[in-house]
Length: 117
Length: 113
Image (cartoon, rainbow over all chains, first blue to last red; front, side, top):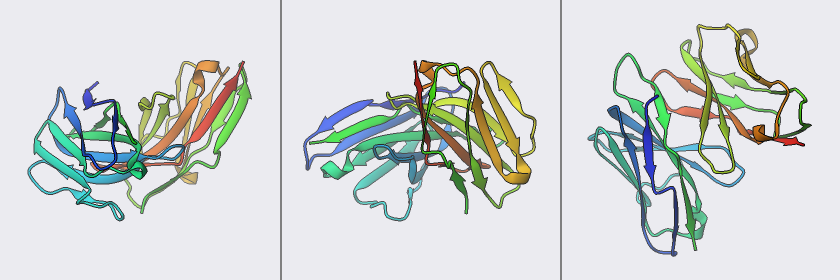
């Protein structure tokens, strides 16, 4: 199956710093990537939808200035958590959708566990 | 609006017992996909199955089986002869054509030796 690589898998950062998470589709082109967040013992919730070459669409309650999304190419989307705080500690996972109009399968990255101390 | 409900928050069984995880979904679309994912403690999502809305055939894969009932909007997952390695959180998810996943709240399965 298609491969989506997410990096880093784990990161610990100090409060007030920024953290960048990368999501790459390795063997297909992804016009759309989705970013999800999962707090401990909860489900995965969509944060934003990232379309190549255009601004991301954020779900209600997600601060676009805090969670910066850049989708500059068909194989890479980045999520930057700016001025991270302990309440941002969570599991972040991306999903990339194949640009093929016939095969619109979506595949998940391995996820990034962010801990803000 | 799309919604996925997994009524069982946690289930504990003893090894070798059969266990069924329930999933009920809501969508207005006629074309959609249903999924089950396993999430071990490490966090990654392990794909188990995908079903499209036009295929109501039940499926069996080893100890796993799935029952898709469109009439009741359910997509239940059964593990036969459970094993300790089956312990994980299981998510049922709905995805409309070309769109994002909508996940259920998850069911935490503990299989005791």
